[in-house]
Image (cartoon, rainbow, N blue to C red):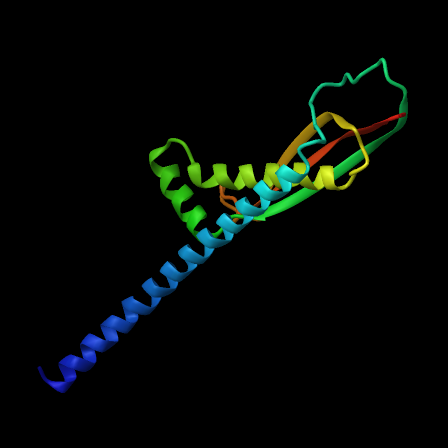
Length: 160
């Protein structure tokens, strides 16, 4: 093989190898960050299991309420490039967008945890509501760059 052929082969390898390597690195780094976030969610949910957050507007009317206040928490979770790529491909053929399901699941769980962490002395959070919105995107309809989830409810503390 001549020196020119070797040089041409190396150029092609670098032109495709480096971008593919960066794509693989980004994919695995994103997956690792998501796994760490899920591990954090599991640990924190176990710690706050004693504080229920319910959608019901009713609470134990037989007990005297010492304090009732509005609690609010929000979280913004970004969709990485690979989730957007997978969702774009799924958009062409239709069907379930699993890439965004994990994004919304993480955002919902994180917002509820932040809500509970904001009122650790409460006995119950009633009338829990959640709202979502998309942030950013490339201007195309249906494109998502990040999702914001807002959770709010009423924290009730009963008298002893």
